[in-house]
Length: 503
Image: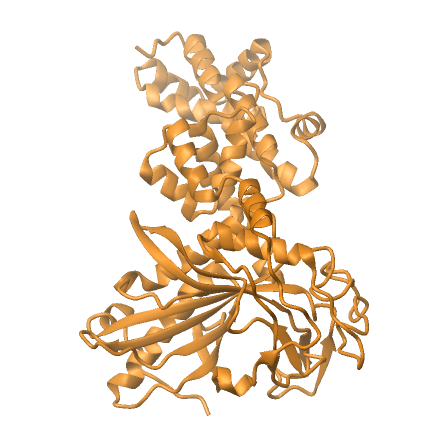
């Protein structure tokens, strides 16, 4: 049964209730093999082809820890200012689900590899510190596909298929401490945290962090309590939210839903919920288990893990420049204002912007192209601009040609469109489509004379001192040259042919 609730506005919720939230982020690590066996982790293979007796949970098959996964987890912990355990071990987390072949998951429980860290995020010019409770390693589950129903979920489906290729892939779970005191900014802080975490993971090279493929998934825990109350409300956990936008939308929706229930004098049920992209609301999943329900006990087939201090120190020394440090450096080196930097951060464009500048583009032009035309194209495709099939070097090449006058801005946009369409390089696109600016003054003069002859009334207005009317003639010449003439040059030629000075 679906519980209906009043359409309380978000702003209204915050006049009566204070939110507390926490995030559990699951990250598939980019190792070549799985967590406890040698099977491939490559995404997109035929179902059940990347499996073996170990990851299928066959009797007598023994797991072996993936050393690269341990290293990646330590890198993540160090980047999140965590302490690294000198000794930790794996446990069995017991529960049944069809995509889990062993009927238990090898995970870490009370002795994680990393703990007690933090991540600072910027929201609307304010720095918010999100505490990290733990970073622990585990194995991923398989994937169920429910067919025959209207929702793609098990309820109402005619049958289900299970693919165990993902079962056993190394998974790091990053769990925040409860985040209090963010008020109206709570959903934005949650989104900013996941965005910053994704950038860190990408910079570390430990995961491809493709949320659309499930290699980065977020569970959003949300609760409300009356303003002034010292006790937290009952939390719900919205599972497997798979985009930055949805993290924010899911929390807003859940806050509105919970406020409506509390306003009616009812109690919040502790449960998992699922976010509906189409409606922007959450729906009930199942009652939320406690740790005791999983009957954790130490994994008997694995020895404890004890990272050597020297090894941890080597890993720390090898860490690349992290996103926050890089942003601060770029802001200083490229003289970006806080608002300019924030716009790039919010659009997820810092890296491609910096790479475009490194390829030779002026900072102002690189920023304008990525936040302008390229962002428009990305919005039309409903993807992030950084995911467009054009490289920073190609964008820098277009910017350079526009600055040289070899391309107009309009032609530059056509070149970008063609690169995205064909995958060809900038020079090849220009040559094959004849997109270079017409610089032959003879041809432009001929086109100007033709425009004047075809528009005598407009020509007379210009001669009579109505200079702005020349725009009609400029447009005629641009049409005749398929937009390949420089508008300023065309205007100068037209005024000269009409015997008019602009001054």
